[in-house]
Length: 268
Image 1 (cartoon, rainbow, N blue to C red):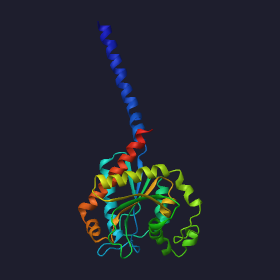
Image 2 (image 1 turned 45 degrees about the vertical axis):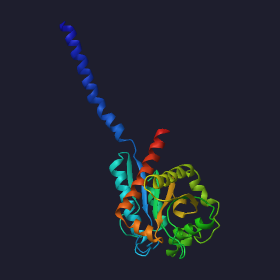
Image 3 (image 1 turned 90 degrees about the horizontal axis):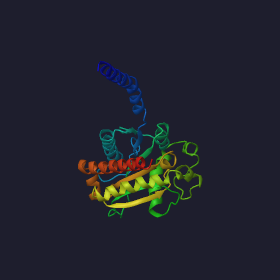
């Protein structure tokens, strides 16, 4: 009987030592699991105000929404690391924004903007989400020209942006090669965003679109550019200035990113 008790004690002691020895290594293994990096890019900033409504500037609206998106991601998802291209009203050119994402070795790039229409089209409203494409036709070309036009603020833009002309509808085929590998995932996230806007946030979705947006082309990961709405539509401008609506939009983007990450993890 004493021998049996002694043997049991030896087994328990061995198990305890094993837990002490191996537990730290298990902790290291869990800690070593890389987080999913999301770069949030509030469009424009500083000397570049972006589009203008009667009372609001694009750079201010998108910064507010972008910070809310980041807060949701940080607070509600343990496996995500958020990187911002800006947190304040500062100017960064398009190349810097793409470089931030690439240097961070990010898994996802989300650029957030607000839209505009020429005078006489104030009735147009709704959200749009863009992925990289080379067909610049109609309205998509107008969006591409506006979002790429910040390039013209740089004195050496022809050299810095490899001769890319933001006012030309003709895009060299090389422009699409970088993002081609990420196109399927970019479209998946973009559709998630528009579904969330229309089904959960009560916004009018104008759908997923493709255009030759420089900041999307030069990022080496799935990338989308979100247009939150039209500051040139008086009603939508008022709504985009509302903290409540900004929160709805940020929540929708957060859920779209969360669902995208969950989908990727389920397929691994």
